[in-house]
Length: 169
Image (tube, rainbow, N blue to C red; front, side):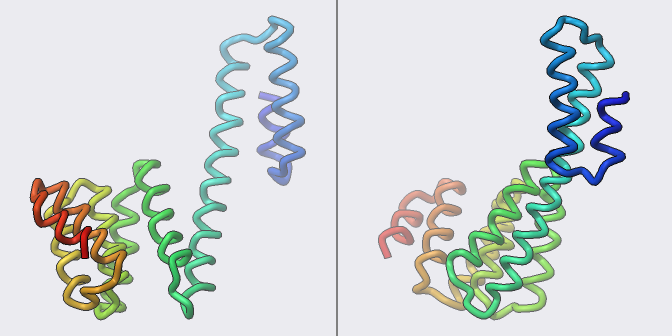
C-alpha cells in the first residue's frame, strides 16, 4: 500500500510514520477506507512497534553495560525490564537464555541468580526459579532484593510461612 510504503521506504522516522498515519486517518475519517487500508494501517503500527521494541531492548542493554560498575537498583531494574518486555512479546525463553549466560559468567553474583530466577518465573518454571533463589541466598543472605525474591517465590509455591519469614528479615 502506498501510505505504508512511506514509512517502510523512508528512514522510519517519526515524521515518516506521522505522514503515513495521517494519510490513513484521513481515508478512515472520510469513510473511504477498505479492508486493505485497515490492514495496512495495522501493519504500519506493528512495524513501528517492533522497531521501537528493538530500540528499547538496545537501550536497556546499554543501561546494563553502562551501569555494570555500580550495579545499583537501576541496573537490576534494567535486567528485569528486559525480561518483562521479552516475556510480554512471547520471547521469554530468550530472556531465560540471556540471564542464564549471565549466571554462568558470574556464578558468585547473587543478583545474577535473582535475575535468572525471575526470567524462569516468567517462563512458569517456579521450581527452577526457587533453585536460583537458594543460590542467591547462599551468596548474599541479607540483601533485601534477594530476600524479597525468595519470599515472593515461596508464596508462589504455597509456602506462606516461609515467605513471610523472608519478607520480615
